[in-house]
Image (cartoon, rainbow, N blue to C red; front, side, top):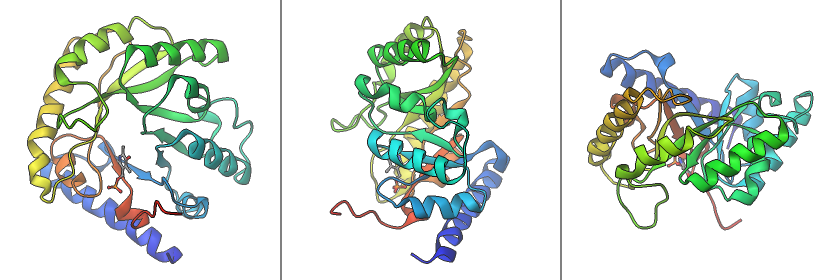
Length: 249
Ligand SMILES: *Cc1c(COP(=O)(O)O)cnc(C)c1O
């Protein structure tokens, strides 16, 4: 992909996000576009970063580690192995996380979107303690469409999991994340997005310590505008920015 095309794509997503904000009476600053760069070369990330794009999403630990460290080295960061704040861009971990890979992620990702068990939260807390990391920002992943293949916990279990997580040190639960079903018509996901925003508000109203619950990570290439209209604060957009992914290489 030509360099100008990439930034053009990004700007087009940004404009569409701003228009969705406008329709919903929200400010564009309320929504962060996370450029999902999985399977895409570091060169593309560098091009966007050079033009001021700051938030990138990765699904696989190994890929996040390699890209984050190489970018930090290229951009002259101090000690990229120490903590997420030492990296020149904000990395968002959006994939399934195994407890044995927590260390690689908490030293690089500004936010982990995919916490779906107390077991994982405990592992994050423990590893943060060990590494002297004061705080790790996380989101609880909700399985909204109830598709068997999708990760995340059922809505009904969210409060219970939240109450367990907030007892752990070194974690702040910033909100909820969900991967909506793949649909042809983004309007089909609107009811899911609405329910997530209602759930987020309800959990926020519990006013638990270390659980500000202000963030809602939902919406991808096919439905991010609808997600913004329904309250998303983080949209995870891959294809519309980077083009189609090729998993065969
Ligand atoms: C790949 C991925 C995205 C981006 O999907 P696109 O449809 O390419 O925008 C967003 N969120 C998660 C969790 C993903 O795995």
